[in-house]
Picture 1 (cartoon, rainbow, N blue to C red):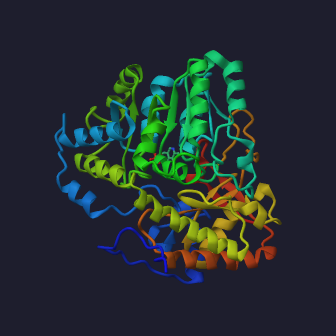
Picture 2: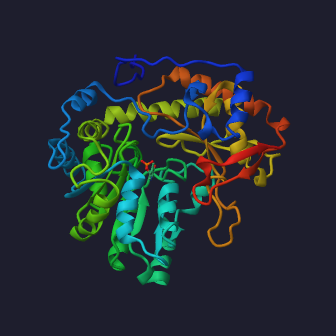
Picture 3: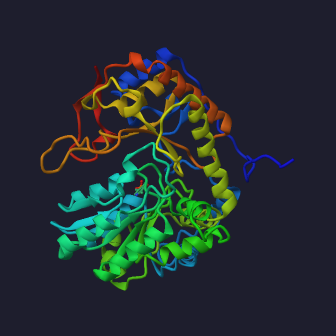
Length: 457
Ligand SMILES: *Cc1c(COP(=O)(O)O)cnc(C)c1O
């Protein structure tokens, strides 16, 4: 008999979590203005708000923390990190930053100017924020298939090269670079194929544009290439990683995702010009060049995390758990973005809360209902996150309206996934009775989802 699947690690330290009553949760949710970002974490039983900075570090990462070099300039921890990144990606120039959006801020301060157009596949919200905040345009060139949540295709995060080429033809000089997000977070944690990365590269060369990878989940992307793309089954994750980055000129990284650290990020590039241009902004916004926004100990832990998380067993354990939750939802008939993504399940709220009009934010309503049901905190990746059009100030209802259940790395067991699935089923079973959603009482001009105040209708 074949041995069943099990995690590629065992547990050395635990943290208690606590259940609550429905009455408590009703009160907390009201006090939080129906915005889960405003809840206190001790009010949450199972926290799937994000996989960002919420992973469990390994004993080797904790050991590396103790060896951190906190020297202001030229710390050995910086060189540990730099050598690891260069070995994994081939990029020679490294700028550490305090997280992914800081990497965007530093690099885009040099690269993005008013009136520019930056084409890519579903720009992440902070990426879009840093582009639009500079009065430039984030042009989404994702394949149309990504919008159909029920369609099962292996690389649903891909760039539509016809759309990309049209943008390059129409806007030529206004495009400073092309951005490819791996995996495509906004489209549901969907991977981009090596073939697609190669096609983007060919277009970039034809129009003489550099390519930037927004790389928060590059290791998960490499895993999907190994599993799903012809010709990669026998390659190691590290070989695939190297090949992916050979098709880019640089990367911005939120190390809080595939770096499995609680805080950190970096820019890495092979272009002297990008490095020299960004350097000054690093010093201005983040810190001196050999620490950017990071402690020495954190750079050490990140170096180990990057190494560990580009090993097959680690990624297989993780993605197996996401697929496990997906199978449970299949059993209950709950629609989600198919196939299951790398870091999260994206539940299709518009197919569940069909009586809630889009103006009343169905995915946000579902997010609130799941918390009220069992103290499980997911997060809306939908119409509230999509924000308003910068020109017309109208809500953007063009995209998907999803409830994201992001799974932290190495944190919860499959038993927790069982609880999540049943809680969601209970909400699903009473979906016909949910007819009203939310109304915005207050919102910020940019990235409103973090602070929005809502009223229940
Ligand atoms: C998280 C993320 C970012 C921003 O990184 P932070 O570390 O949260 O600042 C950028 N792009 C993608 C694809 C991300 O997932």
